[in-house]
Image (cartoon, rainbow, N blue to C red):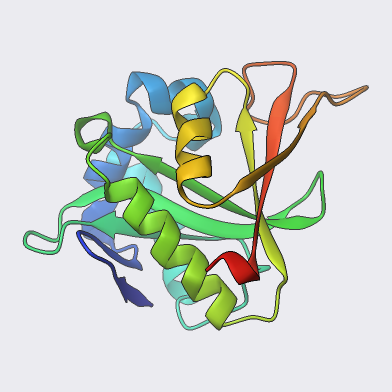
Length: 181
């Protein structure tokens, strides 16, 4: 899969992305809000199996499958972030997930990626809406969600369990409907 946006390209992960992927997921703010990316990864090579698995699913357009894609710069093909989607187990809805290297944040790349990716999801499916669940402590991501047309529905505090990969006890639940494309 390849999606071209204004300033970035979204494409399937390749083994050559493993080094940048490892570097990015160990950055302070990525690690803070998405610690599961490094739970079983102690080197760039530890991502090869994951990338191979993603490659085996690269022809699928089923947005309910958990898939991840590289966000790359068009001129250099340098992987600078990740975007993906899939069924979020705890809420049973299709969630968009993303992160961007700290070096490339606040430059419009993530906004371009989210908007292009959400539009693609709506084009290849009949889903009525997509969601984001964002840790309440992740204020920059909350601002970005609103800029990308996601509407804040509510603040949720799970009872009896903690939402996976969340620093806070609560998270914000956003939706973007098809008609907001």
